[in-house]
Length: 285
Image (cartoon, rainbow, N blue to C red; front, side, top):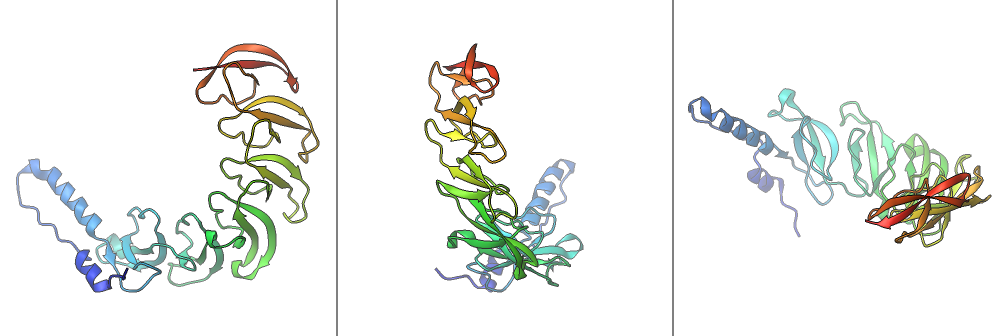
């Protein structure tokens, strides 16, 4: 598919839109407001240049940034108050964005540099994380959703500081203790590590019936805690929880989450929940 030239885009979306409102009585003031708002929305100015697979555009600094777009420069647009505008574009691997730009998923920051293009702010170089099995990113980079930090890397020149290696999480993966835990994963072990800058490593699993997880693990949606036992599998902690899928009449520890579709019908005595002596019998709603 071809890329439209700047001239054709400018014909479709003019830089300035004049809205003429007839001098009707006061009751048409609401119409004036709507038309003025329409003029502001249409004051998006497409500028020449090939930025990845799409062309750049300009918006006033107070306008909401369209979803998925990034800021590539601070710019001037006469139709904006004070002329203050941003140049924006859809991201692509290797694009440079201003430091105040959002970083869309699955992009991460792999470098930073000074620039006059961003009104005194640095520029960041973005990489599309799903193009790599392992990616070295700056420590100030956001970690894309479902990705984990696997190791620390000191003195990354492009970052003017330290970095991390990140990858997309899979079952039985290892993540540094300071890594985000992707949705749907649990921690079934924590170990000392030399690759996480003094921090521990978490062993991540996709949950299954009867899995044992560390006390600092998220409890996967749709699971309950049915017991707690002594364990040395979680560095710095002395116990683990047993997770099971709920059913009508199951007894859970009092500190278990209450799953959707169930309610705590009655309090019952328990002997397998660590120091807790009471739990709950769950019934289907």
